[in-house]
Image (cartoon, rainbow, N blue to C red; front, side, top):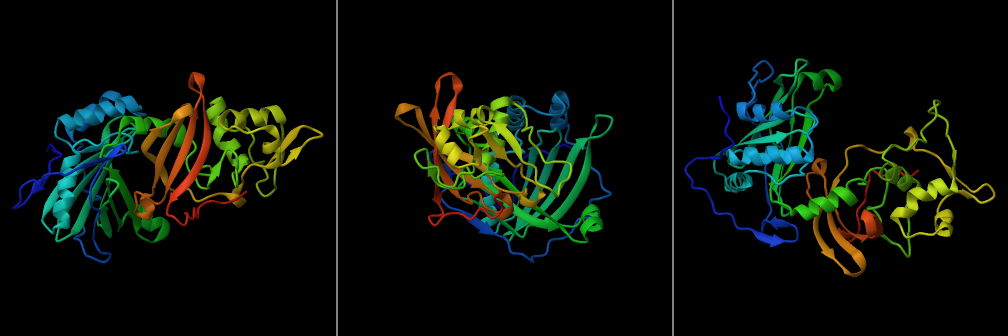
Length: 392
């Protein structure tokens, strides 16, 4: 059976979509919230009922195999859209195909109408997830099927679950989010509890320039194990920036490989490396307008030996791994080669497409170089508690 990505509407015509342009994205005027924890959905036993993957989707993915590039992913999403499918990539790096169908589905769900929608989420590692959504009286039921390649290179259904969403919303930022809990044999054996799923799909498009800025300047550093985008600072006052964490984050950008200074074999003991002055500064200084004296004052520097003492992060100061991811939503090009980026932190596990927002200034340099100039958290006004952050 071919699964067409079409919206089925009972007793109602398609609704016109009103869009207001703002920055990089087309923003909906209102946010919709529905769904209540505890509402009962009919459980569907799916473990022993396997479906063959959709022929059109399977054909596209089989032609490209695993480890899909951005360019190839764009081709897949566009191709599926031309066939009438609702399709999105697993990292929200491409504009969704068939977005108008999702918007209409959410409008009808908010109004308490009955509607059905099927979405394809294409995975960069190959394979895809299929979401079959149905709504009635504001309740959202989800069936999720996961297709991946087997040992023989054949795309097959590997997993299927169903659940009633505890909550769902279509946000002002143009995201469709839903979350719920489901039973699975694996999770029950391991934890004797239900498994939780938190999904966030960007529906409204983003200007490609925003995506380029994000991939080049924001995503490589992100919010994990550093505070570059979590605290307010400027190049005349670096404040609480942790340059040791930035050494970890920027080393791969500078040299194309992971930091070689790692924990020792005895994980319970601290390891201190003596990194030569030139090597340490050669990682930090290309990305900041900072002099040696300032950098040495904010680190543990031994002037007599001209080395920076460096202790890698260990288990004692590891961070929670499931955190927000950044998304540039608008930009402004200023004089002097400065670009101002407005960034939202999208946090599916916290059921929000805007956990906090921050403004980042970047200085563009000749031959593709750049420097971070400043960061300012602009939402919430009182600041954001990055609770997952663990200081060294």
